[in-house]
Amino acid sequence: MGNSLFIKNAAQLITMEGHCDKPAVREEMSSFNIIENGSVYIEDGKVVEAGPHEQLEGKYTAAEEIDATGKVVTPGLIDPHTHLVHAGTRENEYAMRLKGKSYMEIMEAGGGIHSTTRATQEASHEELYEQSRKRLNQFLLHGVTTIEAKSGYGLTLEHELKQLEVAKQLNDNHPVDIVSTFMGAHAIPMEEKENPEPFVSRVINEMIPEVAKRKLAVFNDVFCERGVFTPEQSKRILEAGREYGLVPKIHADEIEPYAGAELAAAVGAISADHLLRASEQGIKDMAEAGVIGVLLPGTAFFLMAEFAQARKMIDAGVAVALSTDANPGSSPTISLPFIMNLGCLKMGMTPEEVLTAVTINAAHAIGAEKEAGSLEKGKKGDVTIFDVPNYLTLSYQYGMNHVDTVIKEGRTLVAGGRLL
Ligand code: NIG
Ligand code: FE
Image (cartoon, rainbow, N blue to C red; front, side, top):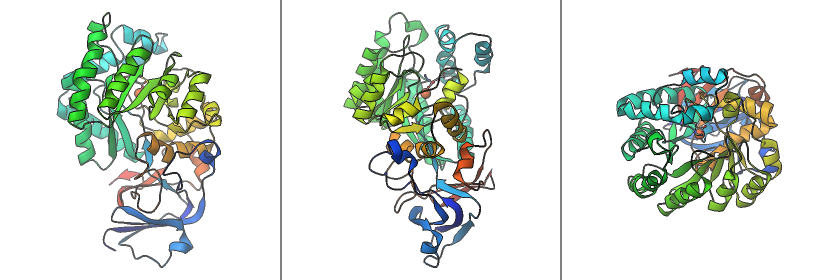
């Protein structure tokens, strides 16, 4: 009995089981089991059994019970691409964009990522921690139990380490799990624009070795984009990270087609993210190399750009995951449920595919598939309970938060839609 929890009688229980070895692709993304009147038993933070209520009934005596009658139970949602740790906001640039300035014009003039970099460099560890902790609570309230978080608003060794240290401390102190990515190659510092090579060299020779030595990140990400890092520079940075055990990720083909998807396949990245302008060849290469496509429709929505071709990617065999890209410039939201709506309405995904994309496929995109992303024996007891009668409603009613209860490793953290 000990620390044990019985969630019972869900109108629909979706376990997402059966994809712990490989992400779901093609029709696997929409062919999960829907268990009516389902229950889950969790002990010492781990799932013991999830299945039809009659199969579990009478078998376990739990310290705590949650009645999920009339509700939908899923694995805790996973957001595989966020810029959680940063200081400040950029509503002024939003207003400029509404008057016709473009995202890249603003960045080239010293705003954009540079503006958040200045704010993040100026912020103390404690200030960054506090701002990020509040955002993490918002993720939790929206049903998210694991996120990835990137550095990249420091751009010097000192400030990149500060961002990663904050993420580590939040991971230790806050129940939401954080998987860290080093993204020193997020922008070229303004004063080095004309001659970026010394900066690229500092990322490779100074930052990557130190981040790896301190074990502050699992992944290494690059903003491969015209006017930022070229495919050639991106390749060198990703390969250098690999030497130090940092697995490549890439911001690819976000604003312009730039052969980012092709590069992701060539370097064996775990994921290529954004892909709004990915080429046919890039999509094919990703499917063949098993690179997960992390799509961020909140960014296309907020930048008023064309959306990534999720339908085409899934049909080509790319495993797709969805994420908020939470950041102050191109996607100021923490709502993964809203991203699910956009996945359906703007990228041609089905309600089943979007659910797979924010659970087990998202887990694969950050190497967390053995412990999270599905409700199966031995995995973490991370569960989200939505106050809706069926999962279809999740991607049908939009701009609402249907989260009722969030459980992290068997502990109830959100109940009745409120933080406990
Ligand atoms: O994923 N593209 C680069 N990075 C972020 C945006 C960061 C920002 O604007 O602050 C993105 O869109
Ligand atoms: Fe991003």
